[in-house]
Amino acid sequence: MTDLENNIQLGKNGRLRHFLSIDGLNKALLNEIMDRAESFTSVAAQTVKKVPLLRGKTIVNLFFENSTRTRTTFELAEKRLSADILNINIATSATSKGESLLDTIRNLEAMEVDMFVVRHGESGAAHFIASCVKPHISVINGGDGCHAHPTQAMLDMFTIRKIKGGFENLTVVIIGDILHSRVARSQLRALKMLGAKEIRIVAPKTLLPSFAESLGAKVFHDIEIGVENADVIIALRLQKERMQSALLPSGNEYFNRFGLTERRIEKANPDVIVMHPGPINRGVEMESKVADSPYSVILRQVTFGISIRMAIMSMAMHSK
Amino acid sequence: MIETQHLDITTLLSKLERAVQKEINTKNLKDPLIVGIHTGGTWIAEKLHSRLGLKDPPGVLNISFYRDDFSQIGMHPHVTPSHLQSVVEGRDVLLVDDVLFTGRTIRAAMNEIFDYGRPNQIILAVLIDRNGRQIPIQADCVGEKIMLESGHRIKLIGPDPLQLIIRDCESEST
Image 1 (tube, one colour):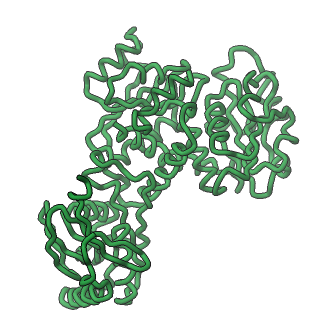
Image 2 (image 1 turned 60 degrees about the vertical axis):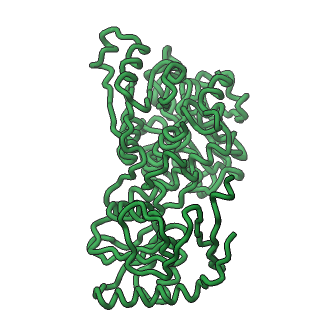
Image 3 (image 1 turned 180 degrees about the vertical axis):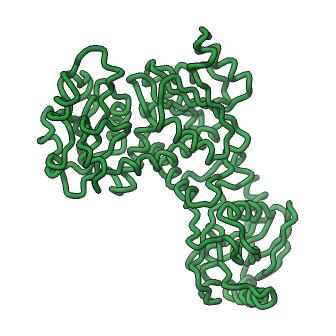
């Protein structure tokens, strides 16, 4: 899919047209997104938290899967850019009456909309939509199956850059369910592209995809060794809804072997930061007090997520 | 490039400073909040700020997100964020730019200021007031009024030293 995405994501001028996955983008473009996000951080300081950049543009939020953080931060980002928004509730829409995805898209296109933000349980859904929409429409991937969640990866990269200043000297550890995690896939590619010094994965063998090492990550099965001298620790959510068979005995057992505790964090560098894409299962991926500790930047990730989504949407909208 | 030796920055700044001081006195402005438009306007605002001995630090407005032509000309990828430390609500705002030309930048700047709060009044001070207005906006305080041919552009470069240059954009593009 990489070559196709490479062609479809960028316009003829090399600017961002659709935002579907980190694959096919480049370091300069990722930095441009983060630079643009930096510019938007001052909007929240205004009494009127809005800039008129997407005034008169219509954005459709097409969420075929549940989401709280991603959907609300996309919606806030859209509102802060002054766009008009349509939220399609799939559960009560014509899709549930049997309308095909393509027919849904064609009908929304007929309403003269300008952008789709898509979350879908099937890998490749956003890419499929991007390949059939009219030329003036941009598609942003808000998470597709186990494939990619590039806006989450970009807000994570932005959080790391804001706090650590860069990537060259960093050891970044990703812990958890790599197999089912679209977040981890996008993060691994972004970290590699941005030149992180060392990327590690800590996961049970059953939750590790075969391609893990080909992405340039070192694999550990023992968390105590995996977090040694880490600068950034990213815990992933156990995706119970995506597990088709019993890959783990219980959340409790997972916590005992892979849960992030204050004692385990002591093995990392003293100024380590702890991240999590949310929602957290307290007592499963991490000890409750870790989530509320000074190490934790989990809520800052949420705030930065608005700026990064404003950046991506404004860039894609103005690339044509 | 066209000769600009007659436009000495120090002389123009002194003229502008006197005009602003007169405006402060006649309109009885209380602790005006000085705000410069990125980038040329911020340089002028900093100079005026120290010359006039104003209390609050100078604010910076980057109007890129408020421009009415962003879809035509695109946007610089890295837009320095606006920075207004002081509260705008109820204040006398001294808005500063290097060159007043079409008036569109000032319109965008005023839109942005109102998104930070409702000022008591806005005074516009510009180093250069040139012909070519496309909307009805005028400056209250001016360093120098000049007439240029329509294809000519005057630009402040800096920050150290500050210098005005005039270019003939029509002949350069053909």
